[in-house]
View (cartoon, one colour):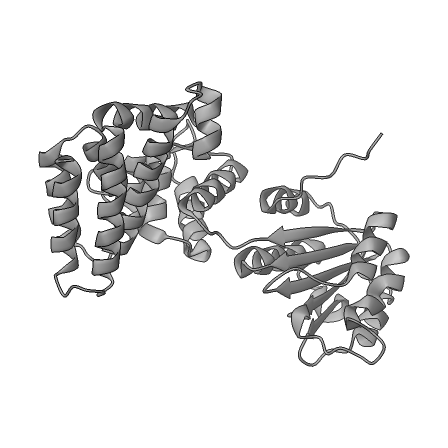
Length: 349
């Protein structure tokens, strides 16, 4: 019977480290540096007492480090403490040595028999670590864990990250609140999670992060945002839609047109998928739109009833044209005028 693969996430590792459980080796790799930096900082903080880093922490940097020195440090026993922590930051900068495809291959032998009192953390940014001998030795001996940190490439990825982080804080968040934060803060995860940390301390007894809580403490309007604009267009509420655009124009810093246009493209693309799907079951529609929320699918369905398939195809064309012109290609119009023109075209499709 095949061994079940462990599901390694930022939230699961964070919870594990906070509980005082440590692996002998951590490989933290990928394109999104936030998770890598935060996990490395947390491991150092939790694995060592306040007075211990002076004697039991070795920090190496890839542009100057020699892997042999990292191994030597990892093999040392801790001084008056239960464990030693050895960190190799920017491992992608490690110089290749003659005869080695990757100098990190040298860690293969240490990974085969790691010291139980050492926690070795390898931070490899910009992509996945290419040292197969090291990762295979870790897998064969179960001596560590590999965590991959992919860059967020879509609104769906960002909202999923928000949801996972909120859950790790012991809170819940609704779809509108997720979208408000995603639209306002974007993929700046350091700021995003900082705001969520703050909100988690301010929630009521039900532990829910709500639009009202966000409006009071983050400075985002619960009534004038991209989520509300989406709702206005879904129900063809022209008055509400243009009122939101007017608010956006008065507050351009928090409501860039490029973000709104991107949101509209994602929404109407999903509405078109729902409108043309052969299988109209909830599970099938959740699958093709990439959402885990039946409530979200119901929104797409309602919009599909309010717009014909031909109208939806035309709307996607209008959105593409607005995106191009808002970026200064073929037009010098004010970007909010372009957005008003887009909203008018959508509502009259």
